Image (cartoon, rainbow, N blue to C red; front, side, top):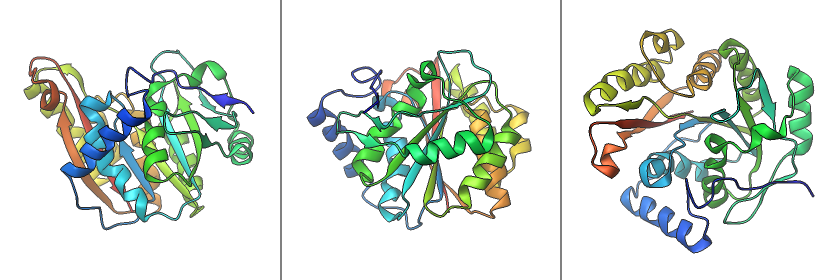
Length: 259
C-alpha cells in the first residue's frame, strides 16, 4: 500500500502519540463548548500547534457533529513552485495517531473530472499535513483527500469546491494562515480585512489588503459558499503573539465554520 508519509512530525506538531494527545486535551479543556452547527466546510490555520493549534481545534471539534464520509483538505504549496493543483493518489496518510485512509477512487475521480494531476513532490506540504492528526483524533472514521495548489485560479477552485459540496458526504477543509511578520497592530489591520471578507462571504473584499498565504483557497471557498447559500461563523482569531509574546513580528490565524 502506498503511503503519504509524515514530513513535518516533530516540527509543526508532536511526533509522539502521547504528546499529541496531550496537546489536544489541553485545547479541548480550554474551550469546553462544542459548536452547535454541523459543518459543510471549515477554514483552519496551519502553523505549529503551539501557535495555531487552539484556533484549529475550535473548528475540528465540530467534526463530532458531522456524518460526512470524507474530508477534502485543500492547502497552498509553500516549498514547491507549482502551476496548477495536485491531488494525492496515495492510499493512506500517516499520522502519529495511526493512518487515515485516502479515498483513492474519489481522488481519481477529482483528477479526471477537473483535469488535475498528481505530482508526488507536492505532497510533502505542511499546510495540509498538519490537519490530518486533528481529523484522526476528532473524526477517525473519515477518509481523506489531499489537494495542494500553487499558481491556480480562485474562480476555478471555487467551481471545483462548488461541485464537491453537491455531495453531502464531503467536508471541505481550507488551510490558511493570515498575515505574516508584521507588528501586532499592522497584523490586526490586515487580518481584519480577511475576517470581514469571510464573515460577509465576499471574495472581492479579500483583494483590499488580505495577506493570507492561502488566499486562493479562501476565495474559492467564499465563491462556493455563496453559491450554496451557506452560513458562516467565525470561531477564533489570534496571532503568534498570544503564544510567544513577541508583538514585533507576528503571524495571524483564524478558524471559521460554514454550515
